[in-house]
Length: 226
Image 1 (cartoon, rainbow, N blue to C red):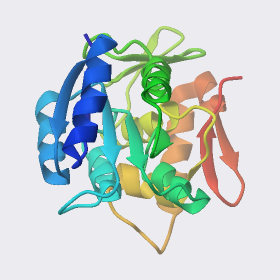
Image 2 (cartoon, rainbow, N blue to C red):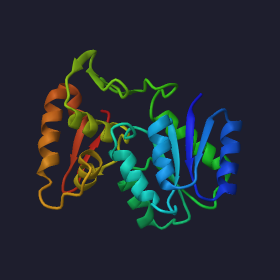
Image 3 (spheres, rainbow, N blue to C red):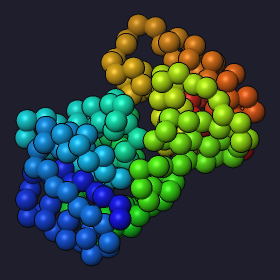
Image 4 (tube, one colour):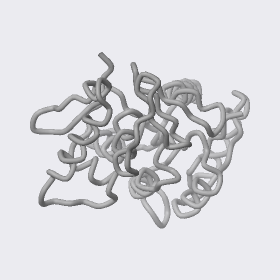
């Protein structure tokens, strides 16, 4: 049974979402603030997190950044729930690593559809041994193992994180700045060649699968199945 963590400070809304999640067959956890949500995410490692942006103590964008930058939680998909629906708000949410973005007020039916879609997108998450497959590339996210055409490829932890950031969002362009934030855990405003150097090494190690990593000139990278 997939586990969904709801990080939402409006208790009535959190209870309503939890009720519908349980009706859909999910196990649900609730946290009322960002710090508690981070603790619960690290302790239980849920299959999906529904994250409000306007939280007491710590904004949801910061929670998302810490989740995506943490070794234990970086692969957990996040759907942001927020009353802020402007385009720039969505862009910031996606740049922080969100997998989807739902604007309040929302219908619970739409939210359940989004939940199912994100869980499907992440591969077979029916347990902690998640597998992502794109063409000849296969990633065991829990075992930190990568195979290309059935042959294991040895990656460093940084290279693995970089690959995961691309593989979890296939077809979506990731800027160099966002990759620095998500993989290295800080904003490095000087030289983004750090990303380029690691990306070159990653492509070389992946061999034929490395051709799926596309450079978007002047912006960043994306992973796209041929």
